Image (tube, rainbow, N blue to C red; front, side, top):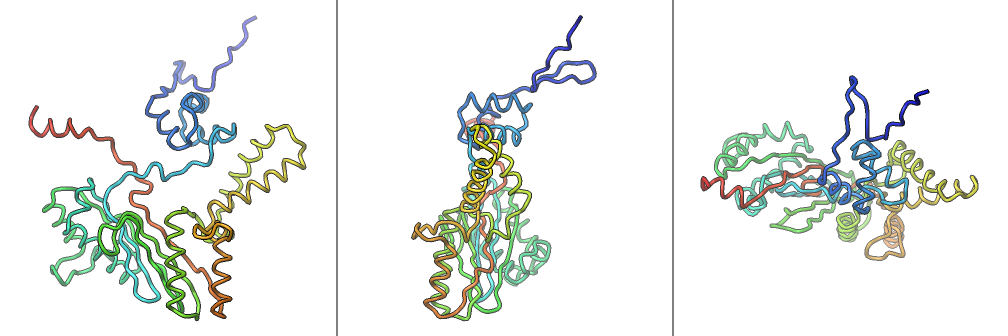
Length: 327
């Protein structure tokens, strides 16, 4: 005569003990910043998903309460990004520091600028870069970093590097929020393969690089999009459409439309060109090719945003100063 009680999704039994995920204000705040959904909706999503942040994002999206998660809102690490270009090859690097004060230090800036040049020489391979012997100090690049850490008194890290190259054409670069020549908070490289006029190609590449810095593309072309990511989006779009109660054939068309919109948002070639929104980036490139009388291929692009994918610890500056004063 006893019915088994229905256990809410945020509760579970483990070894006979009833456990409940503690949904903290910090978790709700993080989800709200990631999705722009309402506070109560975020709390409900986390409760329904047992505190799983990624599942909560999808739950909100399926309910039509949030758009795709934007990682950019979680960028927090300090330091600098640098670029270096030599004709048909370019490199971009990121070197992190604990505070923004170090990013303004001339010694640190010189190291970051040199890191981009070393990356160009070693095709962005971090391990090879660290063993490179610096002529100016007669030490390896890693030893130079260690000395700089000891001198400045703050931990630093040569985090990542990447190169792009074309056989014939140009590699254009762009730095946003520049702290010095070729170093700043965002670094972009765009590789254009073409036999066309190099000056015109460089101008086109520079403007596309500026577009990349502003528009956050994740892929170069539709062919580069991860099929698993597309299927994930389709699943969410289908559930959103199904909630409307429309017939299956209409839902299918709705999903197709949403997938196209997804491509328009994350694929560089499909994005509306920021300097002429009536044209897509691929049309701008095609127009330039027609004007020059030769083919232009967008071969590659890379964009480093300072601290992307890293989470900076919360700091209480007043408490830190008090601790140093022994209070």
